[in-house]
Image (tube, helix red, strand yellow):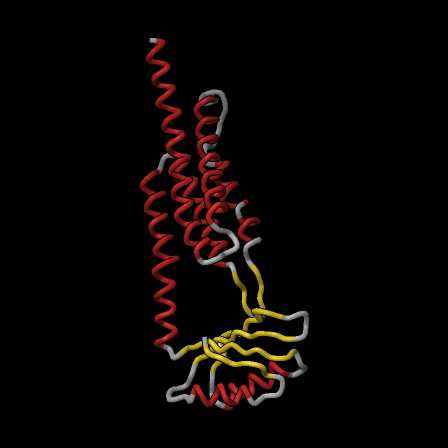
Length: 230
């Protein structure tokens, strides 16, 4: 009987370790993609979130089993706190750059990976693995689809390096308006201590647009140092 108890305890701890290890692997898969694209929250952050979430559910299950019959406990209560509390970490990855907001996808992936950890921690392996696969497909495949869609819509990126002078943005926008370019977004990607600035402008070209002519026209503006397509 003693050996049977030892074996059961050993099997129990192996299962728990397996859940935490699975969460580590699944979180690492998502984190690797974020790290590869130089996002604020990368490989280690996603692993920590996923493993921590798994530990919360393992702990919930442990508490529920230990005090079953002695107290009215909800094993999902701690997991619910993870889902609502992960927002503070996701908010730290969201950055406003110029007119754009960056980091929303990374924040969403952190929230999703915390849910993966919860599933792995409670032993719902099928859901954890399937969700990881869907997240990975979303981050990799759909990104390529977005690029393909931009190309089909005659979209392009124009980089403008200029002296930081008053009214420069209006002058650039006037060139775009004259050539019937639709500005989708303008991002300030560099500001050399107020002396120079580099703009990344996502535009949609009209059919038959003279792209080279537009670049030349931008070059003729006062204060422009360089203009090129990305």
